[in-house]
Image (cartoon, rainbow, N blue to C red; front, side, top):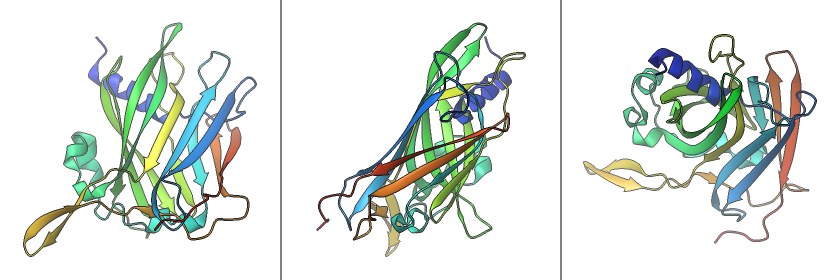
Length: 251
């Protein structure tokens, strides 16, 4: 049986070691983004996805991710995350410790954990919450949970500014003498099927936040997204994608 402390370290490394495009010879990566639904001027969800391969080897770990997106989306000024989740409560408990109105989205990841000469895949669930802020920017807490072969929950942090999401990734070891753990796929969605509560005449009334709204007009050439990924060895890589302009407006 894996010790609990070591299991937590393995899962944390698994959730944070997102690889990037062209970080080393043989490494390839794809980035995609999507709006659901795709209607100009209407509420939507925004999703980002990454797929990484390195010829059967585990991709390199990250030290930081900077994702840029069109400023007109207003991710940092949406009505998502109107309350903050205390980081300590999330670290020592689970998502149930966070206020319902702090939840901002969800996601998933596929990770590879090195056990001797073998790479063992693990599915990880991601839950996004608004965190406390003292600098005027929206801070995110990303709760990552893996079950098999390592059972543990860990918390990542990110800062969401207008036009940019920045994630700091600390280098975290796995087993002694073993390489860091890598992610081969990651998918994150901001918005979605969320339920918030407001107090009206002393009663708690549930409602669905509108979330993120697409602008009334589309940028020339579509909505452009890009990522810059920095690695522990000092290398960096960039990847980008474009979401085509929707063909219709919301009502």
